[in-house]
Amino acid sequence: MKRILQLRYGVRLVWDSGPGWFLASCAIVVLQGLLPLASLYLLKQIVDSIIAALPDAAQPGALRRAFVYVALAALMELLDAACRALAAVISENQSQAVADHVQEEIQRQSAALDLAFYETPAYQDTLHRAQQDARSTPLRIVNAMTRVAVNLISLVGLAAILFTFHWGITLVLCLAMFPGFLYALRVSRRMFDWRNACTEMERKTFYLHWVLTSGIHAMENKCFGFAGALIARFKSLRLRLRHERLAWLKRQMAGELLGQGGGLLVVFGCLLFMAAQTAHGRITVGSLVMFLQAMRRAEGYFRSLMQSLAALYEDSLFLKNIRDLLEMEPTIRPPDRPARLPATGAESFRLAGVDFRYPGTDVPALRDVAMELRPGQRVALVGHNGSGKSTLVKLLCRLYDPDAGRVEYGGVDIRSFAPADYRRLIGVMFQNFTRYAFPARDNIWLGNVALDPHDPRIEAAACLADADRLIRGLPQGYDTQLGRGFKAGAEISQGEWQKIALARAFVSDARLLVLDEPSSFLDSDAEEQLFANLKEFARRKTILFVSHRFSTVRQADWIYVMEDGLVKEQGDHATLLGQNGLYARMFQLQARGYQTDG
Image (cartoon, rainbow, N blue to C red; front, side, top):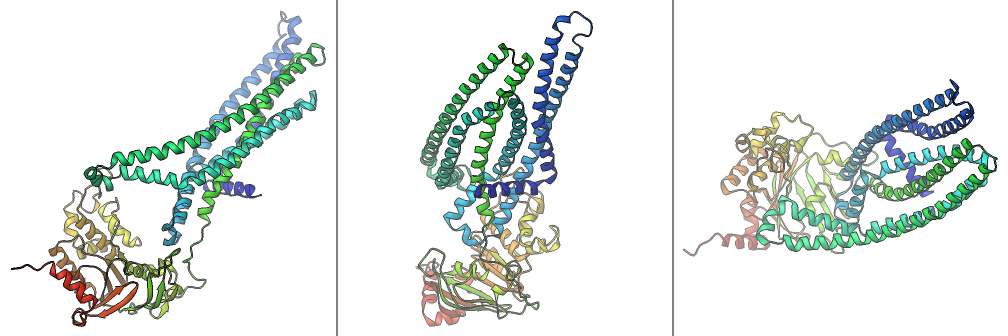
């Protein structure tokens, strides 16, 4: 029953991708199933007409009837060729439509799932298997079902023909083929289990290939010279996968060869029986030809039917990989009745008694965190690596929900809002910001796709991030392709990429800007210009800096110091220095690096 449900799911995917092509495919199936029966009947009539006309073959018109049947048979062959050509066109269009549809569904689902899914190996395995099967499995199922339908239609007609000769012929053919079918099902199940078991190994080979071929790793690859060592690892893993797959293929081929051998013995035994019946005058030569052809074709159709059913079973197993991904449910979802976001923009963001630990871990990442970010305020978040800063930002953006406590906006728990609506309140530049291989304009526009790509606010955001002069100096200005991955792409420095990322955060309609190490790649002049711009900008928005650089931190109106998931200290720069605590020690240690003995 589960397999049937998977098949129905596969057909639904194909239908959703193109109902018209699906209906056209069904029509072709019926034609392709009936045409062989018509051809077989015409072959009988041709032979019998020729034999009947032999005594009078010299008379004009003696073979006229045979010629008519030959013409009809030729017409059937032309129609069959046209159907095959049309079926190929339909299949190709269906293939592209289904592949695109399933890929789009995977993209939508990936965008909807929680961040936690991306950070677990089990999800990565599920995603990898779904992506591997997405482009081919649904269409293979439909093609296999098409072959099953064609074979069944033809087999029913051929069975009716063979029953007129002897009822046992069809039964013997079925019994001869059935063991091979059962063996194919068994191999398919074991192949599916092996494929799932080796998913992580396959992902490792994909990752090694990416490291060895991507521009991101090219410089270290050349400087450290690790390509040879990683190629050896890649080769070892691929060799192991190939050997295991080849072993399964050998078993499958051996089973199929035994099944076909048994089937052939049965077929030729039936041929001898039919020849003897003809020699004794019980059937005509035309009938013999028809029955022989019917039996040979029935054997071929039946073998094809069994193979198609086995393929359906195997593909239904692999379709489950796609379904597993597409039916995953995010835990961060809109409430049944989302609260309306405050419209004034004068509300604070607040964390109250927040505890959090990552799924599958025992060590808390945040403990009893209390914090408030007021409108127009510049707030800094500092602490050693692993102190909980990035985790706090994730909860503030509602990429995770706290285990205890509340994250609030305007005094309302943010779980009361629709996640997409709430996230539009926040503009973010992460420390590991993304370098999109898009034109410069689109790189900024991604921060607020509700805008027209040529909206003046895009250039205004670039000016605020001190990126406007950089972009206008590129060969096509704002339309210049960034990165060398595509034709006419322009490569820019890390600091220039950071300015683009800052502009992407600034172009949003956010009430809160979260800037994680916003000046890590900027020189001192660019950093000073950035904060001069932000000083004016902060009058309208709340800004949260996450930084290790005290030249950045001291720009803040209020500073939170974190350690081991706790807020250890808070206050402005002067107050925290006066407390001579963790903040003062961190500041003095960094300041010492700028001091000279002279």
